[in-house]
Structure formats: structure tokens, C-alpha cells
Amino acid sequence: MTTEINKKTCNDINTKMVSPTAPDAAEADRTKEDSSKADSPKAYSLKTTDRVIETNEERETYELGVRMGREARAGQVYTLIGDLGVGKTVFTKGLAAGLGIIEPVSSPTFTIVQIYEEGRLPFYHFDVYRIGDVEEMDEIGYEDYIYGGGVSLIEWADLIREILPGHYTEIRIEKDLEQGFDYRRISICEY
Image 1 (cartoon, one colour):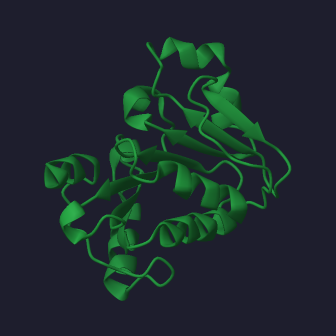
Image 2 (cartoon, helix red, strand yellow):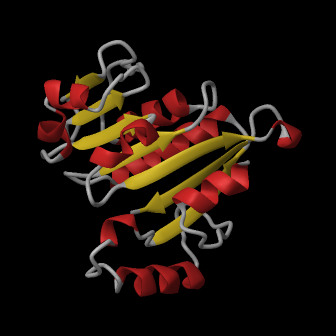
């Protein structure tokens, strides 16, 4: 089942285990080749890069979030996909820390969006698990956040895929208990 999900969201491009901070030459070549397709009519659905990071402790998942938060830029949209209990909140807390946010970060399950403004960029943390219809996103001013000057992270984004912007970074977190209780496989795909 894991393979099927990754094929569907990562467009059947093979994944390669790489360091989260030092992509290899093959990944750079693949990124360059795929980015040349950006002018095609369906560029929004083309995967341009692919990384898989394995973590074995909660702290490592958090630190990956910190690194990505430090590298985030205004207008960046991250989608976060994974089952309950895989570490989405741990990753999100790390991302917020990387943005310089020091207040406690929690999942906005019942409010849909939580706004943090004291970091180097505003951080808009969405949890769309309880969205009944994508029209609810219009009611909260979704586009103002997504197309604004902050960083957006959308948990359960696969539920609103039809309204995602043309470019986003998908982060998929998966467990494999055969590898250990704290093992996580984190796939990062640019669309």
C-alpha cells in the first residue's frame, strides 16, 4: 500500500535515499530535467524533486522540520500527509521553530487554521481533517493565507487537493513498525 500511495503522489519517479541537507548529483540532474517541463500545461502536477529521509527518533523528525523552516521563504506552501500518530505535529513544531516561532504550536483541528506571526515569516498552520466541503476553505479566507507573504502548512491536504496552488511541497510521513516503533519514512516531493 505504501508503494501505491507514493507512486500516485510522486508520479512514479524512483526515490533515492539522500541526506536532507546534501542532495546528490543524480537528484540535482533529475530536478533540472523536470524543471524544464515547467512550461507544460499541467506543470502543477509534475514532480520536480524527490527526497526520502528516514528518521529513527522523534527528535530527528523535529530537526528535519527545523531545517525546512530555516530554509522556508515567503509564499511557501507545505502539504503534510500521514496517518494519525505518525509525527505530523512533531514535524510541524520543528518547522515553526525553524521559522523562529517560540510560542507553543498545536494542531488546529477544530479551528482549521492557527496563525503565528512572531517568527521571521508569518506561519499559517491548517488542519483540514474535519473539512466537510472545500467551500469551507473559502469561508476562512484560505487564499489570503496561501497566496500571502507567509509560510503555510496544510495537514491532511489530500482532502483539498483540488484547491491546492500550482506549486507546493508535499511531505508524506509513514511508519513501518517492522523497522522500529519510532522509525519514520518521510517523502518530500515538489510540485
